[in-house]
Figure 1 (cartoon, one colour):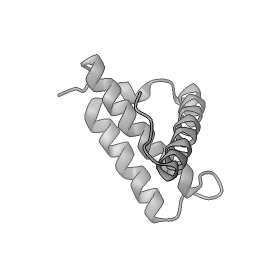
Figure 2 (cartoon, rainbow, N blue to C red; figure 1 turned 30 degrees about the horizontal axis):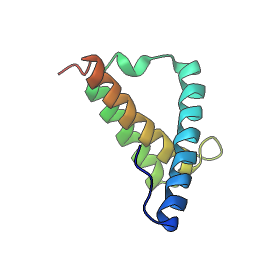
Figure 3 (cartoon, rainbow, N blue to C red; figure 1 turned 60 degrees about the vertical axis):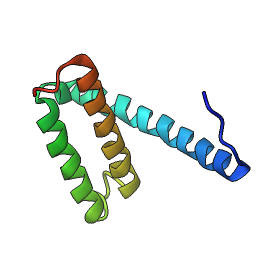
Length: 93
């Protein structure tokens, strides 16, 4: 693994790692409730759900249930779910 070249970049990289871990925990929590439904609708279903989350960001989240930050983490997770579908050959395309 490549290490960041500067201390400022390392600080940013450490913050990103913490956000990846937070996004992972959010994914596990949500997937426990919804199971792998994202796999049912393929690429198009993920695109629709990601667009919905971006609209939630524009509206300031979904208080009191979801903060704007959680919505951004959901968008990141949808991107990773899309990559997973591509890896598994399940994109529906």
